[in-house]
Image (cartoon, helix red, strand yellow):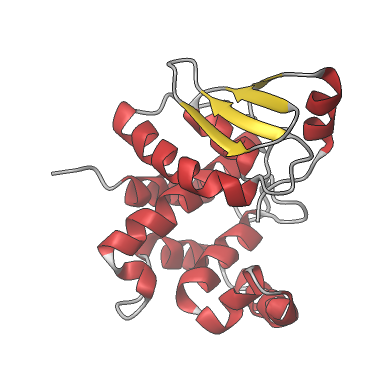
Length: 210
């Protein structure tokens, strides 16, 4: 039976929530562990508020609902994350779970890990393959604001052009580190950038992610 990496990341993140507590910092600016857990619950259980993640007109409502959840007892909040989406949620469909939650939970697990002094994990090959598949498809959107062209590359030879341009910057790292870079955690990602000096510096200074 194939490993459900989304569920494994969910479980690992919840274990770390329990270990570190509600006030632990995360890489998400201004968010504690409680805020991060609330975000995950709202995303799967409150579609009306989850719209605020992607659509600015709904952001205020989404922030209020998330803040209300974050104020709940932390152990209850973590249990809501651990138990997963309700039966009627789109996120509960196995195919959607794989496509929408694998990267989501990997990134947020790292948000909590890296902000609390934990370095890169050794990911198993099957998990890396799944993350790479998602990253290849999502990188064009995540890196769309890049001031230069970008090629993502791994030490084992995988390559994907995320954005074309006159000046090309190659970002090299393990798959998980490339994902962190593309999803807006570039300061925490252990990667190397190569290319024209000006283009490299411009990419380092840019903001990425949704």
